Length: 169
Image 1 (tube, rainbow, N blue to C red):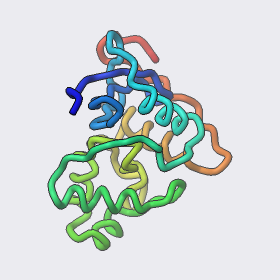
Image 2 (tube, helix red, strand yellow):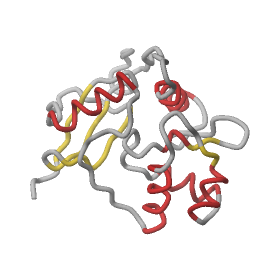
Image 3 (cartoon, rainbow, N blue to C red):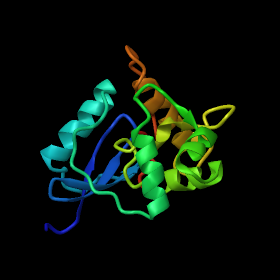
């Protein structure tokens, strides 16, 4: 087995920092600083870039998820939500067991946003949170991803500020 490494790439969501073992994706950090990191293997970079351009899902990339039994159950529930659709935290909780809060916690722990589409889970009255935040750039990323998956939609890339450099990406 290859040693886990980090790679970085630009995206319409801001920088992505990817953790991988060779061509197997282990983690995605949205809004990370890719400066100084090598490019990811083509087997990871090309499918992610294609998804972020077209919104076509599922993303054909090899990946491995590590989490608790409950988290993996929620993540399987996320994978069953078709692109362009959403489910409420409550509805997903009823289908996988648990509470809306426990589903939200499992979504926040998701190491592979984009691949495992936690952005498709919304509050009963509004978009809910994303990445542990209910406002700001994290919520803008969720809204971008939901718009990206709508047929015929081409949302504008986000203008996010790199937290390390202060420069808008």
